[in-house]
Amino acid sequence: MCRAARLDPDKPAGNKGPYTMSMREPGYEGPQPAWMLFRKEAALFADRHRDVAGRL
Image 1 (spheres, rainbow, N blue to C red):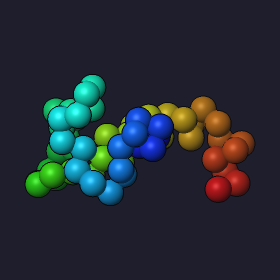
Image 2: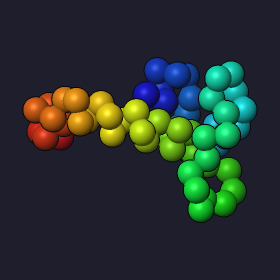
Image 3: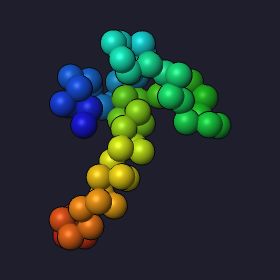
């Protein structure tokens, strides 16, 4: 999901475009890696596609 958004998953997302750090995880100090922005979407995708996600 990070790559599709043209973000490096390991670098801090900063405030690029629609991806802002206002979506910070509670209790996480410092700059967050970009992949953390997509945790909820990834969990929803895996839940919707259990048959495929189960094989991973």
